[in-house]
Length: 267
Length: 355
Ligand code: SF4
Ligand code: FES
Image 1 (tube, each protein chain N blue to C red):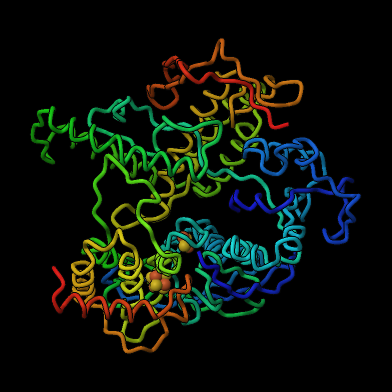
Image 2: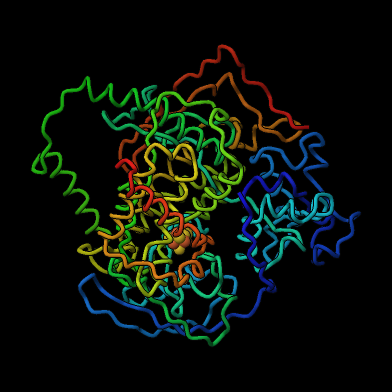
């Protein structure tokens, strides 16, 4: 894999004093309920906490005082599963480049800061509750074509299919997409082009992806449109917030794949 | 952090207890590269269970570093000098960045601080050679079953098992089961369905009805500490017996005092979490029981009473060359042990040595 060079952050590790954080958190009881921003103050936040740990602490105190905790999704908490996306001060996954919400630490903020915390907002990602959104539109796009068909029972030798190093690297970079949806959330059109571009590219670049290549491009793009994602107008907001540094050149590749497939590819 | 980092990093702690100087200020002569010292031929590349136990040992000895004293240094200085920063960055750039995000420290300029953590678990659900569990028609593939792993279960061996089960076993055994079984209709008004649905519903209502004072997370944390202390990297009879009385007590307390907000008519994350913690409180007990019953050391299961003079895991093949499959008989009642003998025809188990 080509190492993505992102800046090593300067920071001082210390048993630093605790921080005071003011939160404005989006609360919404269900998909059809009205939501609103609710204020909370935490007086004892450690700079070494992750953003999600800070929310855990908030929730513990809410439960202890008989209130409903703030629901949010997370799983791996190490930047690989893609389930934790939150809008933080209007930026998907918060202020740090190349960083998922779960990898964002409170030392990025200052004591006394006010932080606005909201769910992804896009028509195709309905809010389930509080900060939890339904990203199954992405799953349906993958089901439409984001796979390869192979025979099980016997595997070819690993070196029987040759892949140029450059293609392998590009495919690997595209495969780094964790389907978090930040690209959609940040885009003013709520376009899913970066996500679909990454998935189409990943497989189009590899020989194993070739047999279903045309069909895949057409079906995934059609499904993306059917889910109600907007169109891409080349703003580049997606690339700027993508925690995995997916390049917008993948959108160009998806467009090429789709155009080629529409003229004469097999469906 | 990933185990692969040990390929280019050197692990050390200060020679002297309580040395609080920053790592780069500790001279070479006052560093103890303990893995290189104890295992000259394998050095920093000893398997995970050995590396973990040794890290714990030096920390228990008061030579751990960082604020908590619960970490050891993983130092890339020498290989950065030898190979260049570019090479190290190409190999581990993403991991270094991940570390930097967590700690705010720059691992290119100062050593990482690492400590063993629970990662994969050994064992799993019992399956037969078809990968079918004791529930007919329920096949268990990959890491979820008990069947294939060595002294350690790492990312790569869990991945291998997932691929092997998925590529080579299940494509034959599952269709065989489907083709050779006569299925009857199982509509949602089937008595078994109703019974299961009622049981789940009762369970949820029970969790919500306790209305105690302690959050599920607090119970999870307390159980985690018990497991870490007594069913962790090194176990002994006294500790295991102690924890086997503490887990049921904690479970009783959970059902008396857990506080689960909200109701069960929407996606209630706290309720889901409480359900998981309730499961853990049952499962922890069988893990401890199994560890107590297996009075030998075997790979990652290190019983302090069973070690070689050099402090390595000492197996007892005479008495323990078997799989221990525990049959669930209900919460709080003793599970039944089924021993499945292990036969070794071609390759025979021997004593590991990394000296
Ligand atoms: S392209 Fe980037 S932002 Fe979009 S889903 Fe993938 S990882 Fe997330
Ligand atoms: S919780 Fe998995 S990426 Fe954040």
